[in-house]
Image 1 (spheres, rainbow, N blue to C red):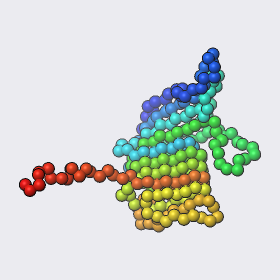
Image 2 (image 1 turned 60 degrees about the vertical axis):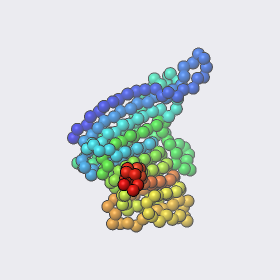
Image 3 (image 1 turned 60 degrees about the horizontal axis):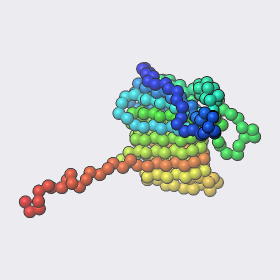
Image 4 (image 1 turned 180 degrees about the horizontal axis):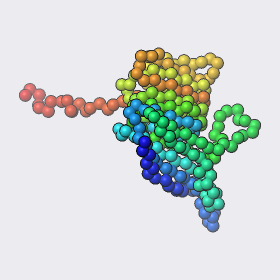
Length: 251
């Protein structure tokens, strides 16, 4: 296994708030890191304890590129910015290649609310973003994604996502065949692919299944609070001029 770390940078966000002529602007602190890991054809990318925004895009290389961006949730003064890198170090994202599976595990401290909230909400003081590029035939398993978004673009393998709160957005090849099982406890399910959408009377959510058990790929999508959107990647049609005889009519 080969793991190559490309960048590790600490920067300050561009957004700022001027509190007075004599005070420094309040700014966010951001830490980013990129690495590449060898990945087998048809392998599995498994995410554990993920949170924030996850984006997985297909590419044509036999490896996975993972960029992790950690930032403070709020703009900080000079004193807060000095302490911020130490606080962001407490958010750990580790990769581990296990046979045909690449496991990405996130570990972070939580701020427990008391009394507990009536609905899920972030209990952290940071923002986390995963930008991942993987082979198109990779299988994606996001075991338990906390509050955030899951965006998957152009992949053709099996996809299994369990999201607590937020949105699942899939952009898949239009000629793909999928056995789709998607449900939202409190939200909507919208799909370009054939399927039956039903509203479950005991919850304020939707469920969609296409019942195509013979399809080569399976989509298992679940969200507690939020929506699921599955769209087709429609290939652009060639202009008519490419097929038109350039000679004048009658010749």
